[in-house]
Image (spheres, each protein chain N blue to C red):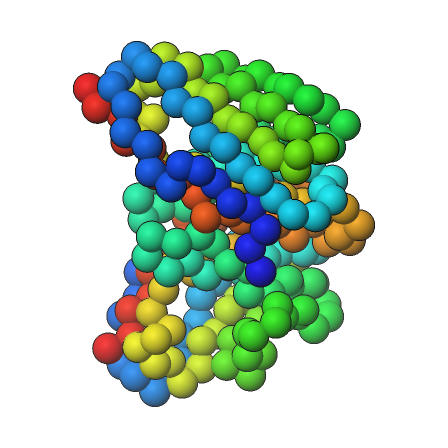
Length: 113
Length: 114
């Protein structure tokens, strides 16, 4: 069953602008991960944030996690046309022994040159 | 990063036939692999967890007799869609777990059942 809910479902911005995507989840988690998927392709792991972390950076990516609100956000700064893709959050639920991920519905980002 | 491959990348089959999809971890051993299904414009849905040397664990609503999973070695898991029907047409993605918190995804297999 799906746990994460991303919003917005679709986001269209101009190159150079920042893109913010949000994710909410329902149960306790070990960690939350963000993935990127180009149309019809596999997933690329972007960043992992653990339940005891509040913010993490990787290049132009900034992820926040608020476990009290069960939500996370992904910020892409200075977006580029090549950032056009779908972005999914995935939760590794607390107590899960095998690390199976539950994915959200995703945000489709379109960056216009 | 680690590499996971899937074969084939695309397959078209006739209704009633069976299709086997392979998932390989190329540079690490994976005792656990996962199979996901993704319908157009939707998210990934976990189908089953594949454990090397033991039976797969299926998610609720996934028919184990229809989606046969075999994880015979530490680098290979296979998903066989038996008696495929048009509604089985989907994008199937596997992932292989390297550590408890790190798994790598394959590029996916596009299955079309005519």
